[in-house]
Image (cartoon, rainbow, N blue to C red; front, side):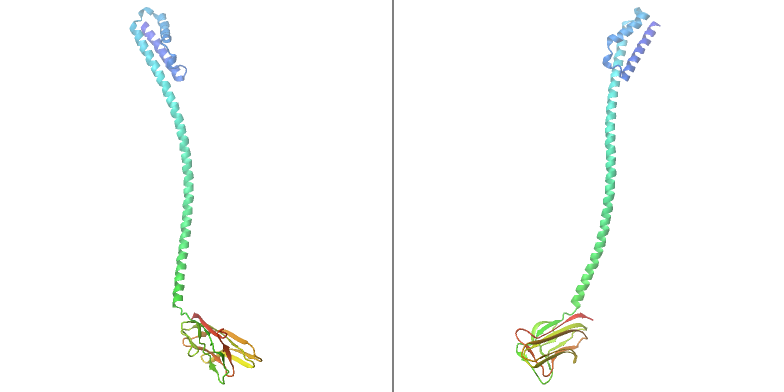
Length: 282
């Protein structure tokens, strides 16, 4: 009976020691063999010291060592737990920062995607416009290639004075400056329209004699459509010029006529000229 009471007292001491270790009040280093033995001896002395054997002391020592070991382990576990909690707090903070950064990146990515989509749409529109422009350019090139290239510019002569004559004569401009399309004949002095279209014609004539007339006319298919007339009373230079736009059919003829009794002048300075070109075909 007394042994059981002593063992109960020992267990109560061990329980108190463990409770103090868990609460941080007593650590493994605070528990010594002398303190435990003093508590036990006090209890045993009250009961019956003569009945305690050496085996009981060995068991008490073993129980004390186990209590100290468990207390130390509990203290270490608490330290590890606190360290883990700190690490977990740091990881949680990093995770929150990463999540915030991910949200920010998602917003930026959505914005970039919208801008890329807008750029692609704009690029598609520009590409369509470019394709249209290229087709128009090709069409203009084709039209330009198909359009006859007709233009001429001639000087009259290097002989000086021509006329006056009793009758009208066709002026044959013989000095070739330009004759694209070869539609003007220097041998006949006649321009023959190779295609139906709208043409522009101009001429300039001069004379340097006194008391003479200088009367020239532009003829279309044998009919006068434009003229220039000057009269010089005394010796000196005089000039006349004119121009017009004509609609011609293919094969129409255009030429310059010097009226009877009139005269013109030309020399190396190219004072008298006849010009024409196709504005556009019809």
